[in-house]
Length: 141
Image (cartoon, rainbow, N blue to C red; front, top):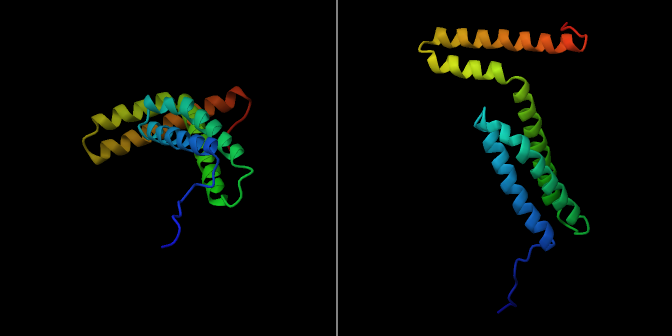
């Protein structure tokens, strides 16, 4: 028989450990973001942590050849965690309109009531955006 060939990972142990921690943090970040307010605010904490651990895993794998797929996946994951962090910060700004929409949709029984909730949400978001732009001396086109 042929010699016993093991499927050893070409990654160094530190990069393997960091990539596992990264995947866990990324999963937690995405799940928290999907659960909406107030749990989505947790993505503000787990997102940067995931990005840091992902970057550390990339750094530790720099000297390892033939792991391009790993690096692409890690870069994509770091970008997703950064995006989730950004969206968590955006939710802080738009918290009130989102909470109002959630409450209104919970009360809405008919389709027309849901449409009214969405129109109210759009008006609230536009008003908030106008207020934020006015603070810095800008207007919407």
